[in-house]
Length: 282
Image 1 (cartoon, helix red, strand yellow):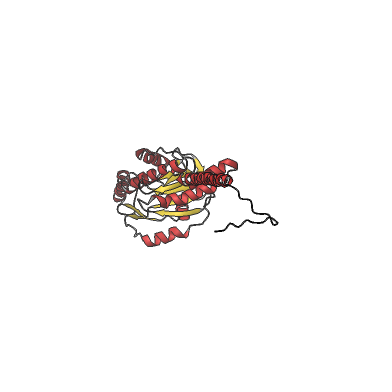
Image 2 (cartoon, rainbow, N blue to C red):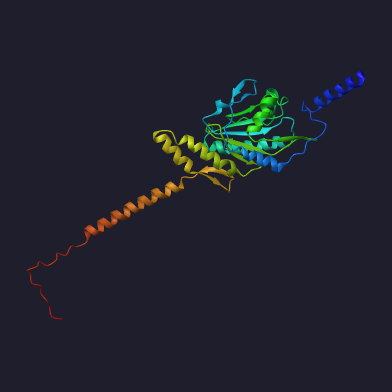
């Protein structure tokens, strides 16, 4: 009996090693996508607690340290070989577009490994390296199993074991500058405005509060940051203000011409009251 128990333990250890440490239960759990979406939407507007997580170097970071700017949160598990890398690459493309449009330091990105404890700081560091993620203000985080269970619940992210790893919705969560869940974005290849428009609004809420000329210039720049369907990216288009400027200049010169012509026109003095008006015979 002891021999069979030992063989069973050795078999489990071998399976864990072969799967890169991602141990799955024997029986897969059915994943209900409709319920997952409903649960995801139910947390919108809720305040996130100040969780303690670990960065790629194993250093503890508080979620509150990211407040003051909008935060994008994506979920992956490092044992995933297809979907998670693909969604991360697409997210990197979208983040680069928005950093170019809004400023590299205008928002932050967190990719979190939910398969604790296997998604360790080392595993997250290796994942980021394999995906060649080098964009600024993007961190890869992990946590212990208990913390991760609460963290994913508060962000409305659910998942289930399957024979291939995990079943879960592709969810990107946008937190506002105060740490509240502002928007959920779904899909492996979402349309850029789904992320760009709410992100631009949140960035604007922060940047336009600056005093003086800086706040005004930020307001103008954000107003002129528009999505270009032909390129699939955001660009800064000042044509609206350029058109207003041209219209004002043209109006100024038109009014100036009217005044000048009016002054040049000959004046006819009206007859005085006691002055006889000569009537010529026709």
